[in-house]
Image (cartoon, rainbow, N blue to C red; front, side, top):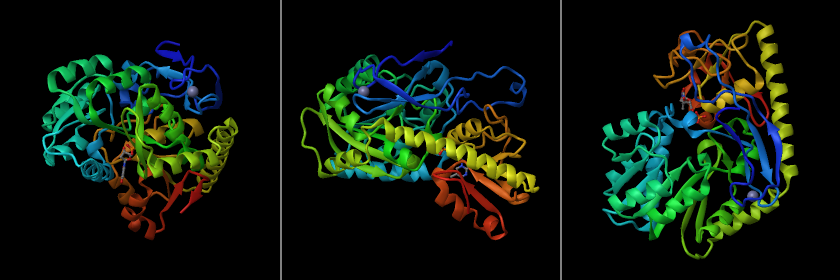
Length: 411
Ligand code: TYD
Ligand code: ZN
């Protein structure tokens, strides 16, 4: 298929022992929202199969869609999400404190998006540089006053920027490491661009959280790798880097923040504990992934049965949050306009568009308040707490939320 490459070997350890345990596709790219006039045009669908490396335990997509197709006009804006802003403020404060970072240090962010994270470092006296492949988003960051290089990160970009700016004391990559196909080139770039005593900080969704909470809708084409600590350690070791510390954090349905540096370092107690936890969670066994896949198929059956029953009783149903994960869920479960009238979303540029594949119209969030639906399917469940408290009036008036995982339930 055009623009799709089959994964031949594990991205981390190069083993060919890859076992596919789940198929969610064919399915459109989860952020390819459509304008009305595009609804009648052919829509590209891509396979979405997930596999397990029986050598190192790395979970990854079995196919890779060309990055030019996925990232050139990216619709995700960090700054448009209030909880992510808070998260990045805390992250900047914590990284500066943990590393005792002097003012004027160069902090670079890979996949810097609209510059929300770097802005926090800048406000705290750091020199900052963004690296962002999506042209529209990079331009926005520049307008926000964040110096941004509009490129994919890798050895070539690293050579260029370290020449121009010097080496970075801190390189961050939040929710981007899992999007990288050629991890070798990326890591080589880190070696080139990172100061010898610098720290590389990544945040990636945590495999254990995805598996135990059955958050299958965090699986999408852009998201090539599903990390746990053990394969990450193996990867860093190959580049003569080591993991210094790790923290579990709440964003994106459960993530880990990993600190790594060049050379051999002592593993923190937290990292050693997490390794032990992973082995207790049987992350080295494909059966763990296969059980997850059974849970995914159970959600599909239970959720569609529930929604169809409610619809048959004459209830109105809306979706909440036109998130990428929501689009995976809607497509995988084949939930369309026969069930859901619209999806509400706070992001202005999504409003008026249609969800990929299922073609559900996206409305402003005020619509939920103006004519409240009987039921609302929570598609942005990563913000469940915030949304449920924000919508207490809807709930007090009898409106109900449906949460899809780990088992569909009404609250
Ligand atoms: P996001 O967290 O960006 O996840 P994904 O990576 O899966 O797209 O998606 C959340 C979406 O939900 C985003 O489009 C904004 C929207 N949203 C609301 O509509 N209302 C809210 O109160 C919140 C928190 C988010
Ligand atoms: Zn492997």
